Image (tube, rainbow, N blue to C red; front, side, top):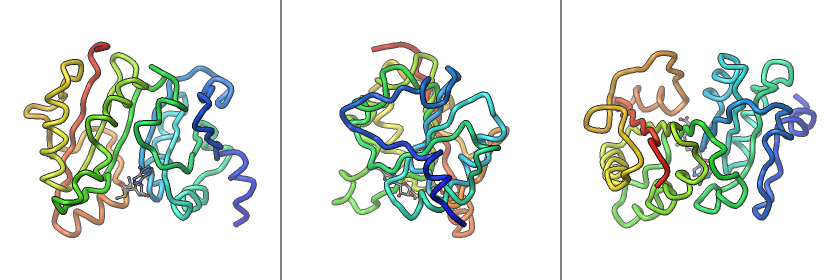
Length: 207
Ligand SMILES: C[S@@+](CC[C@H](N)C(=O)[O-])C[C@H]1O[C@@H](n2cnc3c(N)ncnc32)[C@H](O)[C@@H]1O
């Protein structure tokens, strides 16, 4: 498959010093949903066809993953999708405009299970400050992990945030929600015997 045509259409070149103009990119002002760590792209491929009036931006740091996702997309059925190959961190506020995102998906972020590596976890206080900035009021952050300790870490970080409300009692659920889309990692982890832990947080107001 010749990916160059798809690449030209779907891939955004990120300039870390310049804010994206979503209206110019998607040629409309529909909602923007951001998927962080799109992996092999099962989620963004399917959800974008289920909700064609929503624009989806998928981010992954790995070239290999971007190529895999590009193979799943076509310009006719996924015109509401864009991808960016970038290592996302708290500097995301430099290229994603403030209050421009309605929903952020973070499915199976790397858990960095060893205690000495915990500080490499993507979800930390600084990163959450940045996500808070790009997310609209009434916007949602949906996080899934199979890793109990990472789930507890995430729940503790959100407990410090007065402007985020946990959607599920005690901060999490194992229950599959309507229109759920399984990702590669969810299937893999279920096969290994780990049930996903779902944590959704609603931004109820600005700080
Ligand atoms: C464990 S995989 C999960 C992939 C997918 N969400 C799933 O559920 O199958 C984590 C993905 O996040 C990407 N990733 C990790 N840290 C990232 C970062 N800081 N910025 C962008 N992508 C990142 C990795 O390249 C990988 O594809």
